[in-house]
Image (cartoon, rainbow, N blue to C red; front, side, top):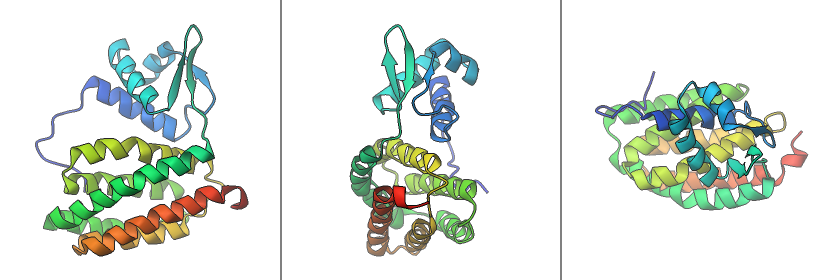
Amino acid sequence: MNVAKQKDVAPPSLADQAYALLEEKLVTLALPPGSMISEGNLIDMTGLGRTPVREALQKLAQQDFFRVLPRKGLLVTAVVRSNMQHILEARRPLENLIVYRAALNARDEQRSGLSAIARDLTISYDRFEEFVRLDTDLNNLLDICSANPYATAAVSPLRSHCRRFWYFYRDRMQLSDSISALSKMTRLVARRDFKGAQKASDSIISVLERMVANVDRLA
């Protein structure tokens, strides 16, 4: 079920396709943090041309996923726990706005999609890949419901950094509290409870902040 599909959306450009492919490889650690890679390697990896890959790289470098080292290549940035605190601090008000607008604006079929994701989340506790997929589907649907492209553009790389953090520490992460809070927030959005959904959104960020702070103890 593709609950996040939207009608009359222009197909992604080649640069957008390159960005999506590289972002996935960064998040899932197929491009490992701290590794060096060349632009040519990424062109081969994506199967796309130099111009779209270069455009995607510029965007990803601005978002702190790559660092360009002259005459050496591209360095995949490390996963740094202290950076995550800043990322979550920036993410909190953006998610709060998106959740608020989604609760007010979602159509009936979108609310049904949200309810379905909330149900699926409750059985994803021991399925890391399934949880990440549901989290991505949920964010996409909330973005569509909120209809604020500026908030969506601002929050998207922050979410990607969070997912990369989860993959990096997946053997230490206990996602039960996060999943419970996420499922609750999703149900509140579906019920048009925008105030409750905003509180639940804040709770999710607070749970993530605790996870980041305590990751060395979560083994």
